[in-house]
Length: 178
Image 1: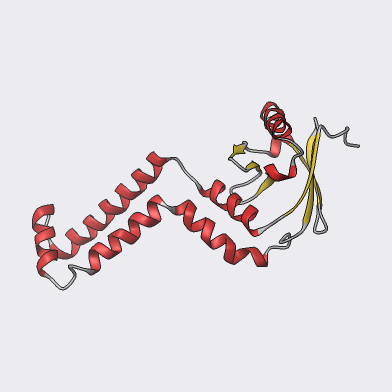
Image 2 (image 1 turned 135 degrees about the vertical axis):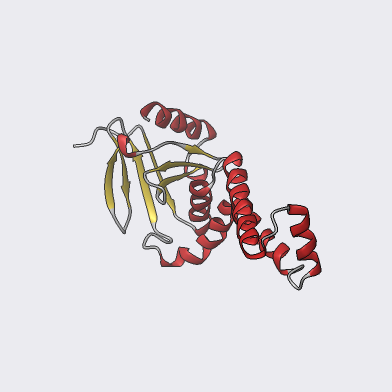
């Protein structure tokens, strides 16, 4: 039997809540995005060297500028840069398309935080997850999120708390448990 919950909230999941979760879970540190972009650019340069046998980057850029690829290659590089640096915004946008397919879309969800576990109840499921399963806490302006995997998190919207102080207290309480 679960002990008495310290915090309990009830809210209706919206597409905006789901999008905020998708963005938060896919966001990565800025330096990691820059390293990813550098590796993509190095890979492109290696492929171009392989196909053209031009090792000097300046000579390679001049050859591209004189060829029919002068507009195509920069466009592809811009797409690669966007994919590397803005992955979390792409996940945010795609989540609106996917929202209608999830079972908990527009469901009323009750989340209880107790000393033992996090309990989530809705018309879709009833689950009790021990605090050891929660990987970290993500705190944003309008949300607290308790990720349990790379793609799933318990969403605690600020709007579901009675006061600003209870939102802050729930954050501190969850931080102590993790």
